[in-house]
Image (cartoon, rainbow, N blue to C red; front, side, top):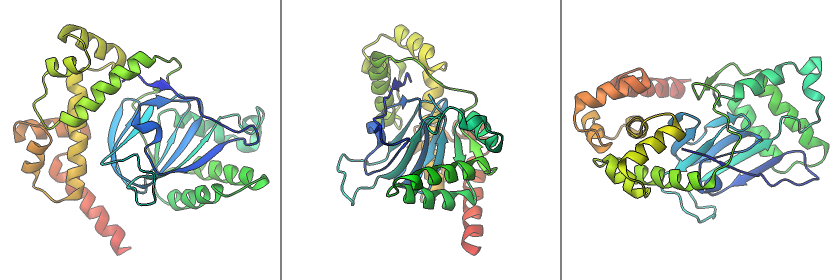
Length: 297
């Protein structure tokens, strides 16, 4: 997908932005911006798109995104109703690397911060003991004012810089520095068509038609802007949905295989292991065991 450049509105009286949102950020469009972003999912689940990665997400996830790293969160059953009853709630912190001045990151006491910003270029899923601390700090930031805002931001940076329990999201630096809204609209059409129809037998001609391109032009276009084939993209969408279903543990693996658009179980196992590095059975078993350990602790 070709992401669009997003200009974050900020007040001249504030060095960074923090907000609580009850609807999908940018309506689920793939976008990027020069601000570093800390994204906390309070409520909601769906698929997370960051750079070259597509992965299920759920409540409690905290992700750090570097500057110009394209991303979007596609929520399951999301609505535009921003009431307290909505199934979407996030707290989003956004700040530029030099928001506290151009000299801060050059100070010897904060040598870890530039290292953190470098790691954030690939995106980081924050795990472990850092999560509850970050949640508390972000909640405090929503109502803080004056010098307290700066103290809280420095506290967030300290927790993130000292966090070793994290998972890198993308395979490589995926930053963008250009904007193409026409490409955005076309790729958003392709993405929506795929998410709405991945359970069916999607042909290249069908998805090409949805984006107003012929078969040959579509394949060339998709490869050019995503650096991957559409078949690879569709497979990752299906595997990501299968991962969610396995975690929910309501259906058999065979039922999940066919519900996610695969035609036979052997093909499903082969693609699942190629994408995740493990089998569907082991994936589910590992998740259930980790939940039992958490419940016992």
